Amino acid sequence: MTPPIPFPGFTPISDRVYLRNGETAKPSPANEPTTILISGWGDGMPKHVTKYSEGYHELYPSARIIVILSRTFQASNQPEEARIKAMMPVIDTIFPTPTGSGNEKERLLVHAMSNTGAIFTAATIVAYQRRHGADKPFPHQLMVTRWSRAMAVGTAKFFPWPFIVTHGLWYVFLWANYLWEILRGAVPSGVWADRIINDKSCVTTDSSRVYLYSKEDEIIGYKDLEENVAHAKTLGYSVDLEMFEGSPHVGHMRLHPEQYWNKVSSSWKQAIEEK
Image 1 (tube, one colour):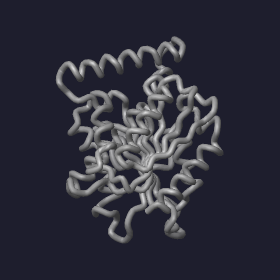
Image 2 (spheres, rainbow, N blue to C red):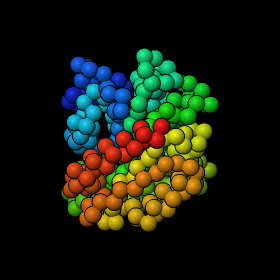
Image 3 (cartoon, rainbow, N blue to C red):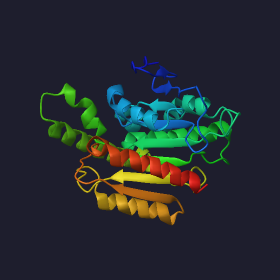
């Protein structure tokens, strides 16, 4: 097993899953999450993901935070069963019983970052059903999603050329890998994840989602994203959108921190009220 990456403030529970307990002076208020699961973007470094975990800790100090750090290569090439097995420590930590610790039901907020984050969120959902039964949808109240050019960001420091060159190389690699998966008869991991996340038997329509995006995103076309949101709505999911002005890929929280965290907070409140 690969040794865990040092992650200050977090305790590794596997080679890619990390835990930070909340403040124990008092239990989480009934209108706040008990656990926050952050499924990081591909090749995301702890120093970058920490900015998000700290933001969540400020909002919900009593909640424990679990972070999944994964390589983009794992997301695109790891066999489906291996992806699911790698997420079992997440399930055994959050859901030792189908509803949580056994003392109270978990109130779970999931943040799926980029394609890699979504792929391992889907693997977590399937891992839950493997552990507790295929008849049980993954219990969570809110899923926050955003996109990232994680492969280029995570590997740019290894190359002497400008970031845009690295970005372009990764873009070509991803499309080549996608086509190769189709040619060999396999379901590309991104397609698989989309099916899981939009499958009512896996993810209940009682849960809510919020998509954070911008028109200036140079990776994900905002019209394509809005079409995907419209499709989720036709399936019966409660979906919200938040647009950020002028922020590039991965730049929403950095450029608009107040808007970003206000939207997360208001989306959680709305998700709880809809229950």
